[in-house]
Length: 167
Image (cartoon, rainbow, N blue to C red; front, side):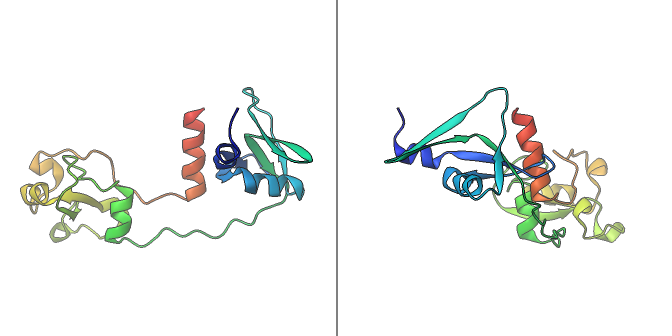
């Protein structure tokens, strides 16, 4: 038997009206959405249900709910290229060796060779790798990138991709 705080700390996956997984919310928020009629329970094969008890009521909260209302998606713009955003995208590690110390920004195609300061040309590199690469492309320097640089994607899409990978 779980304690009340353990149950209330659990999370519920929220799907949009057109079945796109958009976020996780705590059970309190899920109960509010269900009770006010803004969401409906969804049944999955696992049928996981959390039971929340009060002195005069027992609520069954499913692990997945679907919004009945049309939620206006906020307009999301790709953030400008900045050190903070590139660090976040590259998970605070060098894209050549994986180091997490003395990180700098590296232009894959050097600016002196026509490379732009754009999402698909900027990565995080540690100082030693950046110095070793110098004013050359990774191919010229014989270095491999751990991932191909690209602009960040919409947070809801990232959550949906992660959700379906876990299933």
